[in-house]
Length: 113
Length: 114
Image (cartoon, rainbow over all chains, first blue to last red; front, side, top):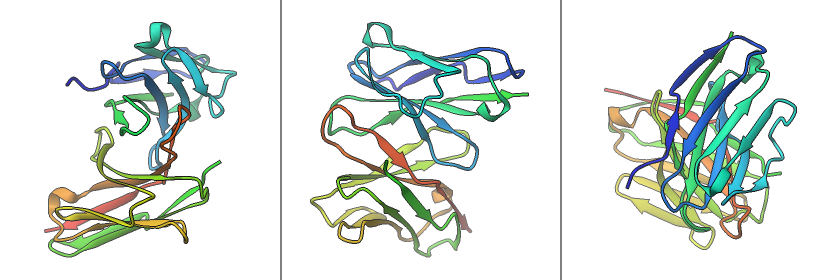
């Protein structure tokens, strides 16, 4: 089966600019996650979708981050405006059912200068 | 929320030796404990997982043990090989219901020296 697809692979922007990331989960996976992985740390959950509804966004900095999953399939994560501390790899993951494992995409490496 | 501590942060072993990585967690309701391997610049990949109704699980050279009473679990890699070099993350989750999420440890950089 095809894996979780993410684009772009790399992005370099200046602080205060905007950026958007795209994720297409594995076909049929109802649950989608966005994680932020800062260099040298473990992935940190930003937001979780179940189909097209938000289940958990408690750790999403809502003043600058937004995410949507229209039609319950692919998803976009946006940062506006970006800060230096947003430099990280943004990982998308999906899972099929409540007892199935998470599958990660290759991530988008964001550098904010 | 859940708090996951992982030790050590770096581990260097000789090829053929064993490696052990330990994690502790705080939420006694957690019941799912996966381990992920992440090579440089690549996605985290699940290598083994264990659920709370099992104390130990083994897959070839990799094993995971769980002590629910003490709230800690460990990854054991035997007969290490250079290709085992990577960052290993433990994670903790509750596998029931729609609000299923994983909380990750900070990772262990394992280096296997030939």
